[in-house]
Image 1: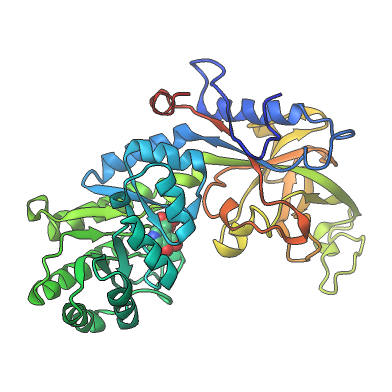
Image 2: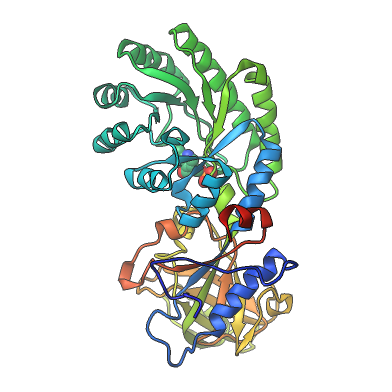
Length: 447
Ligand code: PLP
């Protein structure tokens, strides 16, 4: 018993041996779990979706951050994935935390993190939450409008305030500037009001949008922030900190993005200026660390070409374009758009299925198991009764999948579990099996 089915607690897998690669460690954890399930006899829920999290990946991302942005202290954006072990590791690594609600702040404080390592980075806050943070000594928070300044003056006049400015987020996956950020036309009057209200403005913050792809968005935002620092000085504020927000991807674009940001910071906020630099990365830390395994719970066989099947009125026509009859399948998994694949809807993601186990054989990381052309065509659906609950319109695998087989999805750590619902009674409480491919992180966590 690996404790796999215990939702209350989490389970840490130790490395199989000192030489395992991260992929092998993840693969072993996935395989051990699914091979232990008797799909014919198991109790409801034992075949549920589960995650494997490699905390070593988080540790490597932290080293990569420090290498590329050594002057910028990360405050991890808890919203992205509030996994307790992930937060514990980041706390041990010394990061701060960006929180947006009482529950997030409470979770971080409960770990023993000092309130000074938290920024309440929500420009439009709930009154009772502001009173709560005041009582807990969490002083740093953002604002971007006059009403919020008056709220803070009433509820927490000693707060340390960051003026969040508007950015050009047009090249990001998730745009935030529609909702938040003060335009440069309004910053001067906001600073004047803050002064009049006797408030304590300590810095400027921005966010170029989540999943940003244009490094120049960072350059322009740093330039704008520099202007606001000067405006603040004219109002008698001595700003101490620039918060460059989140938006960083964890893929190979990170180095380029960080390079542009680093150069902009060195030009406009050089080390000798004494300005502290912080950031609020979320997906950068969490995305690649989590792999999701899902069970195929049902299958529908389609005789004929799949594209012909999906006629506009939804009728199924068993004819193919070239006259050949091809068998294809709709497979239904126990996780979908309303669950951990909420990232398709909210985060514009396109998770790619890979075969974990088919016909009693584990095929994890077996290139031959997948094929972009040839093979059998599938569409992949979630478990709810809603027709939008589709993960993949068309994908081909060399193997024939059936009920009881398993698929897995990599890079499922960001904006997945945290925004999963329990719609239709399908649980959104899924087990996480932790592995750790980095000795440094294992030592920190005592694993
Ligand atoms: N900070 C704030 C204020 C945010 O709204 C977000 C995401 O929406 C983040 C940080 C994290 O962004 P990302 O995950 O793109 O790094």
